[in-house]
Structure formats: structure tokens, C-alpha cells
Image (tube, rainbow, N blue to C red; front, side, top):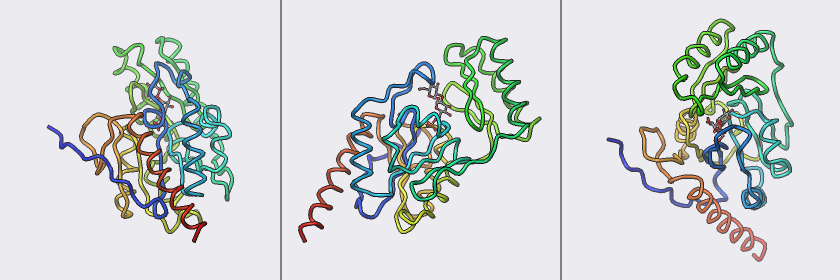
Length: 257
Ligand SMILES: O=P(O)(O)OC[C@H]1O[C@H](O[C@H]2O[C@H](CO)[C@@H](O)[C@H](O)[C@H]2O)[C@H](O)[C@@H](O)[C@@H]1O
């Protein structure tokens, strides 16, 4: 039995920063990582938010920044990005800050790729890690997780599970990503709100709430640290559009005054 959570009220858009997970939060999940669809409406929505809340919109994802660029391209021009669970980040002010790929990471990814080829699993290469996806072979979950945990331990890396996948990567978590991005001049006096669907988003919820903000689960009810809940991607996009309306109205009032 899990507690039902209320939908989030609309905060004052001039006071908050938004930290948005990507897969399962801004876009619906797809059968494979490359099959995700970014529609024009999402680009328009991100553009409206970035203009009306300048410097205070961030995407915080397990994807690499290179992958997010591939999906969102110019829509990220004025958006801060923490990729690879915060191991890399990019802001309009500071540029792209990323550690190099280590020999250990190369070796770990090579082992995971060989395992995926042998077992018929989908291998996803990322800038600072790799994922084994078992959405098409749920019966292989145990083997994939055991392999990822062994490889992570052998090479001093981090393993975590996601939705129908397990990944091995450099350390980092979305809570640290929120705290780091919040030190950016555009965000430093704002209240963080974090939106996500997956278990790695729990660190983001906890960080945002620890800093006086809110966590919003974008998924069916489950055990979570989040204070609020929205049903899924469509409900979040409606909520963000309402916040953009309010932010734009506030900007117009300030211009007229
Ligand atoms: O932190 P996120 O932005 O939510 O990224 C988490 C992982 O998302 C991707 O995998 C998930 O989405 C795929 C496409 O919808 C889906 O096929 C897969 O089953 C999901 O686990 C991505 O491929 C991973 O690299 C991210 O870590």
C-alpha cells in the first residue's frame, strides 16, 4: 500500500528552478533507447520555459549529453544539462565539463558489449558508461544485473538498475547534480523542483526537498521520497505549459510596470 500523492500546485515561476529528467518524464518510454520520439511540441515547451525562466531550466538525465543533444539539439541552447547521472554537465555560462574516459571504463564497456552480443541483449554505449537493456528479453534480467555488478566491482565503477536495464558508469547521482547546477549564478537563489520517473530520480527528489523545494514523481503511485505526483509525460507537459503561461504573464506585467 503506497500513499497517494497530490498533484503539485503551480509555484511562483520567478522563484523556482526546474530540474527535469528525460526518459519517461519529458518523453514516453520506447522499446529501445534510439526509438524515443521528441515531438515539436516538446521543443516549443522547452523554448517557452527557457525564455520565461532564463537560466533556471535544467535537464538531469542518465543519458550522456551527446545523446541528449542528438534528441533535443538547439532546444538545449539555453538549458542547463547534467548528463550521465551528473558525471558531466553543461551550462550556458560554464560550458561542457566532463571527465575523460578512463582505461577502466573502456575495459568495462568492452566486457559488457561482448556479454550483450553473446546473450542477445541490447548494448547501449554512452559517453561515461554503458547499459544492458533486457526489455526484449526480461528473462535475462538476473544474468544482466549480475554481469553489470561484477564488472562495476572489478573496474571500480558504479552499477545501477533502471527500467528494464542495468548500467555501469562513472559515479555520480542526480542529487549531487542538482546541488552542483544550483551553484550556477542564474540558479543560485532559486528553489529547486525536481521531476522524474525512475529510481535514480529519488536522489533528485531528496536533494530538491532538502533545499526547500519539491520532488514530483511522474509515474504511477509507488514508494517514493517525492512530495507530489503526476500521472505521466502528458500530465507533466500540461503542468509545465501552465507554469510557462504564468511565467510569461509575470514577464509581461514586469515589462508594463
Ligand atoms: O535519467 P533518464 O533521462 O530517465 O534516463 C534513464 C535511462 O533512460 C533510457 O532507458 C530507458 O528509456 C528507453 C527508451 O525509452 C527504454 O527503452 C529503456 O527500457 C529505459 O530504461 C536510456 O537508454 C538509458 O541510457 C538511461 O540511463
